[in-house]
Structures are given as C-alpha cells and as structure tokens.
Amino acid sequence: MNIKGRLHSYETCGTVDGPGIRFVVFMQGCPLKCKYCHNPDTWDINKAKYERSVEEVLYEIKKYKNFIYPKGGVTITGGEPLVQLEFVKELLKECKKEGLHTAIDTSGYIFNDKVKEVLKYVDLVLLDIKCMDEKEYLDLTSVKLDNTLKFAKYLSEINKKIWIRHVLVPGITDRDNYLHKLGEFCQNLKTVDLVEILPFHKMGEYKWKELGMEYKLYKVDSPTFERVENSKNIMKEYGLNVR
Image (cartoon, rainbow, N blue to C red; front, side, top):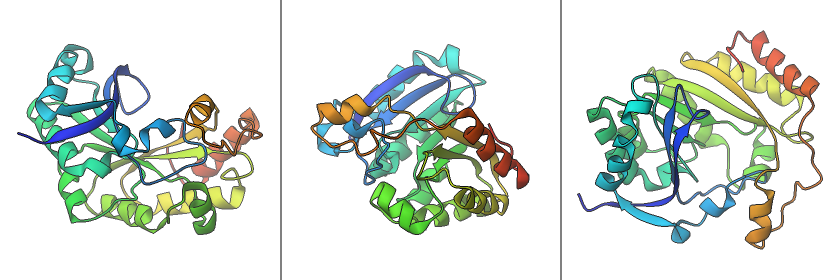
C-alpha cells in the first residue's frame, strides 16, 4: 500500500482518549482554528513531523498490543483525523484485523460519503461539540456548526457509540443556556454513551507564542470547581452519563 499519512506524533499509553490504555496517533492538518486549541502545531498539514505508511504505523502499534489489548485500543486524533480520511480508513481497517478496539477523535466538521466509509471501521467516536450556539461556534472555531450536528445524528442513525466532548471555557461555552441546548441535543441521540466535560486550560499557550500567533484567551482562567459541577449537573438533567 503506497498511501502515506502525515503525522504529528504518537502517544503510546494514553489514558484519556477512549476506554482503557490507548495507542494514540496524532494526525497533521485541521480546518478548524479553535481559540483554545492546545495543539496549534497540528493545523498546517504541510508541517508534519513524519510521513509514514499504514504498515509502518501498524508496526509501532503492534509493539504495544500486549498493553492495549483487550480493554484498550487505538485512537486516531489530531489535528482533525478526517482531513486524511483515506489513510485513516486503511489504518483503522488494519487495526480491526488485529482485533483492536478503534476510536477517532473528531470535530465532525468533515462529513461526506467517504467519511461514512471510514466509520465502518470505528468502534467509538469521540465527538467534540464545542458550542451549541451557531454564532459562538463560528467565532470560536472559524467554521460552521452544521456538519457537526449532522455527523452526530448520522452516528445515532447507524448505532455508532459516541462520547461527546465539550470544553468548558468561562465566558464563552460556560453558559447555562448553551449547556442546556447541548444536553437537549445529546438526549435525542440514541448512542451517546458518555458526555465528557473538559475544563479549559492553557497548557498549549506556549505553542501559540512559538508559532508567532496571538493567543486571544490569555486573560481567561480555568473554570471553577463549582462551574464544572454545574455543567455536569445540567447534563444529568437530561439523563446523560457524564464525567
């Protein structure tokens, strides 16, 4: 197979990107420009640190199979992994042949028939819904919300398990009316297994400076414990499993 993937990095024993211990593949390239992104160095697909074939990545994964199998698996994230959907599909296909659990971490922004083909080899989708307000979403990410919501509804239609991810940013996404809209939307999806509330942090701020980019959220603090609990309680009002 000649297809080469443009990669940012690997994480060999990840514990936060899906169930169990995960081998995490970070793909290069992302059409979103999220203001709170902690990996802006993954945005430009032409600045990949590595170019690897499916066989080469699978070789790395298999070194850790004894650690990640059977309770963990492989997660492909980014950047936005579906920017390189042909490579991702072939890698996921090979992972399934190895009997590994597979997950992708995506914004859902790229949604077409080719993406539907990729999803055939995915056990779990970590879907980042960054905000339920269209104007706020556009301002936060530089792209429109529509496809993400269509993506989520399609996952529900095909009975694909979903973990919804939501970054709680004070003054932006941490608003009760937005959170209620998120809870209501998720309540109507039949395959949401978990909602993860991720408190905003600034651990990636230094990367923006290194890249010569303006970090617009430098005055924003992490949400308080009370606000994090408030967001979780709102999700619970809609019968959702939350952490």
